[in-house]
Amino acid sequence: MALLARLASALILLACWWLASRFVDPRTLPSPEAVAAFVGREAASGDLLRNIGITLWRVVASFVLAMATGAVLGIALGRSRTADRLLDTPLLVLLNTPALIVTVLAYIWLGLTETAAILAVALNKMPNVAVILREGARGLDPGLEEMAQAFRYDRRTWIRHVLLPQLEPFAVAATRSGISLAWKIVLVVELLGRPNGVGYAISYYFQLFDVAALIGYSLVFSAVMLAVDALLLQPLDAHARRWR
Image (tube, rainbow, N blue to C red; front, side, top):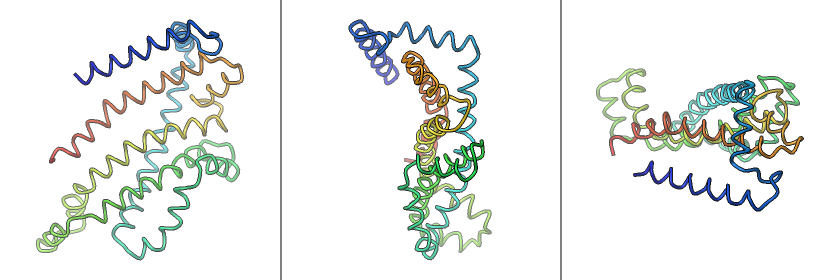
């Protein structure tokens, strides 16, 4: 039923788009057929798959880096009041610094390199992960902590059977919000300083005022990310909340 409702809403949106394109300049709002024709040509040339593949690689690399560093930092802040007091302000500053500024500074300091691009995205995402995992680490069940002490759990056993199961819902929440944030920032990073990827393609076609190309790349990449969410992130979320 939920799938049918989503399909129906997509069809309604497509019909509205088709109707609107009949009454405005096609250069401003091209029809669905024109956008589909562009996507077909771009896919046949190989540019579409190449740009999407490169962008997905950057999303994955920056996301993994942000999750790893943000999770370690968040758990440390949640478990240590001293660390939380010392690092809370720098974390908030980074959390509220616009992504554009972080990206520009990364390119200035490290050059227009792949390392700078991935690091810029990771730095924009890492504070969000840290804040979410910090709240999870703060809310650990003290009863389970006492049980672990009573049974003399070693560090590895405590992490596996006490810490990780309680942090799993928070980690999944950080993952879902992180993916949606990371791919948007990756496009900005590519637009500003990379010679390939979806962001670069959007910048190129913007200069040509090719609206069909802009909409085509946007729809295709959004479809890819929706597929990632449906096939990977939603099952992870269901697994994390299976006990409820």
